[in-house]
Length: 416
Image 1: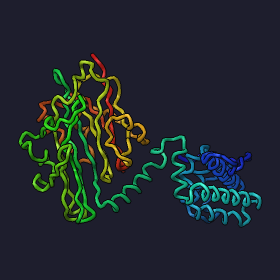
Image 2 (image 1 turned 120 degrees about the horizontal axis):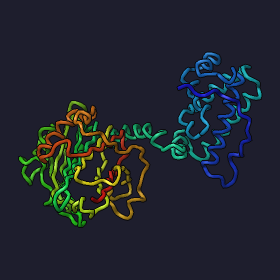
Image 3 (image 1 turned 45 degrees about the horizontal axis):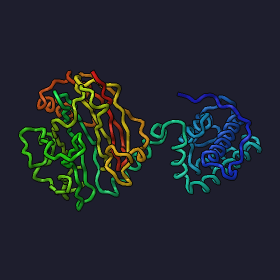
Image 4 (image 1 turned 60 degrees about the horizontal axis):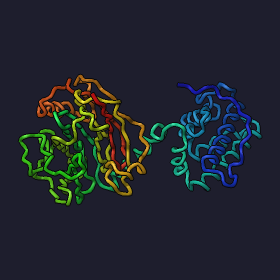
C-alpha cells in the first residue's frame, strides 16, 4: 500500500540532550527532527504527492533507499517508522543529493543538522547504529515481535547455530489432554525434524524422562511409552517417524531421571536426523471436569536453534474450557526450567504469536513445517483409541524462537 502524501512539518523540537531525559525522549526528539526535515526536503523537491520512484529518479539515488526514506517520513509514530530508517551511509547519500541545488540551502542544512543530531544520540546512548535499532525495538507502540522481532530472531538463529554447532528445521510438540473418570491423562509427542550438527565432536540431549505429578513430586514411573511395542527401559522413540534408532542414543542418568543424547556424528544436511518421542502419562492431573483445577499448562523447553516451532494442543471435548488457550515465553538465561514458580514471572519475554483453533478436519492440520504431521497424529489417535472429532485443536506456530526459553501454553479449564 502506498504511503500517504508527504506534508512539510514545521514543529518545535525539544533539545535532545536535556539533562535527565530518558532514552525514549531523547531518541524520539532526534527522530522527529530528522523525519520532519526529510518531509520538508521531499516537498521542496517535488511537492506533497512525491513518491519513492519519483524521488529516486529526480535525485538519482537507489530505489530501495528512496522507498525506505519515504516510508520512514510517512509514519506519524517515529518509533514504528524507525524500522524503515536507512543506515548512516544511505542517509548521507540523501544529504549529498539534496545539496545540489534541488532544494533551498536552508532545507538541506536543516536535514544535515538533524542527521548530525541523530548521530550524536546514537553515539551517546547506544554506541552503534545496530544497538540503537535494538533499543528502538522496545520503544514502539507495536509489540516487538510485530516490528523487528522476526528479523532479530533470524539473526540470533544463524549466530546460535554457528556458535553452538547444531540447528533444527522444526521443533514439534503435540499434547493430548484426555478426560478420565477421576484424573486427566496427558500424552506428549515431541521431537525435532531436520536436526543437523555443525560440529562432528558435538553431542546434544534431545529428551528426558521426568514427570511432575499434580501433587508436585517427581513420579518417574508414571510415564510410559506411547507406542505399546516400546519397552519401559529404553527411550520412548517413535521409530516410524525417526531416522535414528533407540540404540544409537546415549542414555545419561541424572538425579531427576534420564537424558537421551544424540551422540557425535557427521555434519551438514546429508547427516540430518528426525527424532520423535512419545509418552503417555495416565492420571497426570486431577479430573478437569470435576472443577478441581483452573488451568492446564503445557511447557516446551527451547534450547536448540530452530527455524520453526509447532505446538498443537488437543483438548478432549469432555474437558470444559473457560476460554481460549494463551501462550507465554519465559527466559532461562539466568536459570530455572520454566515451571510455574514464584520467580518465573520475572523472566517473562515478549511474544506476539498466540494459539489459534484450527478445526476438527484432519486435512486442516497439514503443515509444510512437519510433512508427516497427520500421520503422527493419526497413530496417536489409534493408540489412544480416540477420533479427531473427540478433540478441540489449538495450534501455536512461531519462527526462530529465542533460546534458551520455555514456551508455555495455558488452557483455562471451566467446570460443568
